[in-house]
Image (cartoon, rainbow, N blue to C red; front, side, top):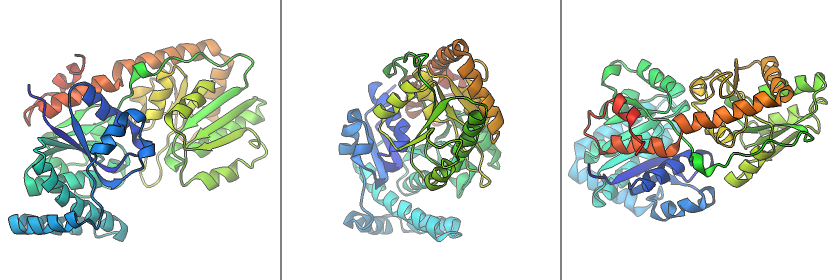
Length: 420
């Protein structure tokens, strides 16, 4: 089986909150796949770990007003005028309901036309995009213009909230990856003919062997709860702070450390002015990976009370929970989306219903009061991550898909792959 030349297509690269994609590409490289990364917009080089700097040096990214963008439109107008007109018409018609969304779609289209020429020049065999929105749109445009085969990975909000042109994107793809069985079922429920979707479940993962299990904090350390997540409503920070206020009412001594940045920061800071929380909650903002691991190392438990927003926004399977479990920290989360596929309630962590601060407070207090159980859950959590969420194993499954004929392999082949 020959190793194809693969290009990865992302909306922005690198991006601190999407290091799991970088880890996936690095894992593919360890298996012999040399991938080039294309991005619709540039990211900051400081957001990528040292071992991924070569990906940034090889990254293909054109400025919105680059001469190459205008040359590409002229190239495709001369070579395939009807195709170019068709992708423009379909893109505009499908995204016209929102000026902001339309602007982003037009940017994706113009970048895609430029990338199509570049990927032809580099003789790329296959294109893989992450996220079903603008990245997948760009992959679809590249396919329509050049014929290059493509696939894409769906995650969460790109399916649950906005789904423009989903039928076209899925229908033209060689295969589509869902990061959870929940996500695969949801995707198929949105299609008129799900049997033709060629959906494969390949989970995101972490490099388990990079994480050394951390000893639990000492008995004399104050009970510490860590939450690693962007400050967004779907992550459930307000629920966590409400649970912490209940712990304070119960006389539990604790501290809560929030790592992440986002649009909820001001509201959460106001919540922290509650007398029950004052002086107990620390907000560290976004942190690089090594600092996040230090925070997890000082924590007795990692909590991420995921929830579903009224708009439908929700998590898929948070990689932050995988990190914590790989470091052998007990985790508490909720029954949202694919989370139960990672955290098995009572076996590899604890799960509560979303938007239930009292149940969350109870679960946290249980772990504080029963350190032996917390250690058992933590050890089982690491085993669970190694068993189903190891990035090298899952990269092997992706590599098999990249190298296979359009209708192969079967889901059973995928399940067996990646162990070599």
